[in-house]
Image 1 (tube, protein in one colour):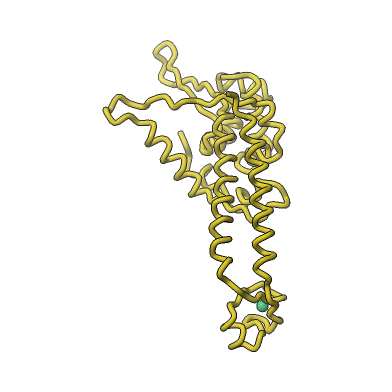
Image 2 (cartoon, helix red, strand yellow):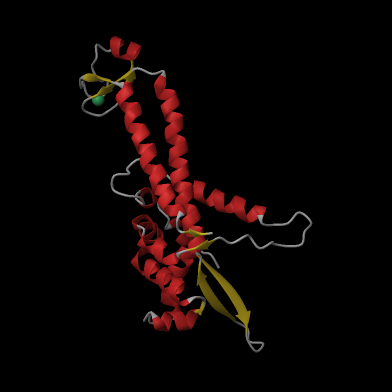
Length: 238
Ligand SMILES: [Zn+2]
C-alpha cells in the first residue's frame, strides 16, 4: 500500500520550512516524526493480543485548523498543492470512495490521485478502509482525513522546539563565545585567543557574542512558540 518512493518524497528541507518565515530554526526530521508515529501505533496494540485498540480520538475544529498558516504549509510540504486540495476536500466531505474522490476533484484516473493520497497517508494525515465487494478479486478503498493527527503533529513540533531552546539556554548560560563575522563559526575564549581573534576558515574577525542578548532572544522565541501552542490547542474541542 505504502510505496517507498513516496516516503522518499518527504524531504527534510521541505519539512524544515513548515512554520512561519520568522521561524528558521525549527528542525523536525522526517525520521523523528516517523518514530513518533511508530511509537504511537505500538502503543495502540493491546498487551493481551486482542488486536489494535482504537485510540482515543481528539475532536478538532477543522475550519480553524485550516485557517492556521502552519497547518496548510505542513500539508503542502509533504503532499504538494494537490495533496492539500485532497486533504481539504476529505475534511469537508467526510469519508469517500477513491474513484468517486478522483472524479469529484477532476483527476483523470484514480491512479493520478493515489500518489497524493499515499503521501498524505505516509504522514498519517489520511486513513483508508478497504472493502471487498461481491467476491470480486479487488478491493474498493474509502479514504478519510485525520485533522486530529495534524493538530498533534504541529503541537509536537512546537513543543520540540521549546524543549530544544530551553536546553540550549541552559548550555549557553555558562558559555562566553566569539563568532566569525563572515561564516558565523563559533569559538570559545581560549580558541579565539589562540587564533588572534581571526577565523580559521576565512580570516574573518571574531566578534564577542553577548550571551545575555542571546538568552533574551531565545526566551522571546519561547514566548512566541507558547503563544502559537495556545492557538493550536484552541482547535481541540473539549
Ligand atoms: Zn569565518
